[in-house]
Image (cartoon, rainbow, N blue to C red; front, side, top):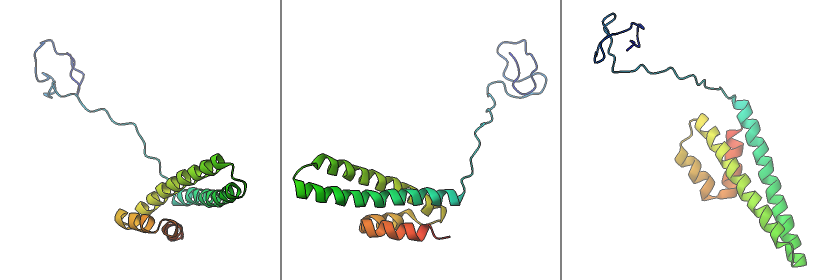
Length: 134
């Protein structure tokens, strides 16, 4: 056996303590975690949320356009549903990014949820404007 603390070689097989330094042989030392936290700047978070907000607005516009095309031509329903799905996904991504920003501003999660799910579209606009002010 070899001691984890000092590296001394121990000849007895069932020893519980090191003869040289006295440390326990049953407890292995924890390895240092090599993960480093990456600091994300608030400006980058705001830029990402702005891009998602623009994507969400473009999805709303495209959904209305394809809905009008569907109503006028009685066709292209699959395009309407595709753009509607894109609208839902972009809204979920935007809400995730806005929730991260609200946590950085120490806003309670309950207030964020009530704002965005009580009145979804207006709440999202309000949260975006409130959280991206510098």
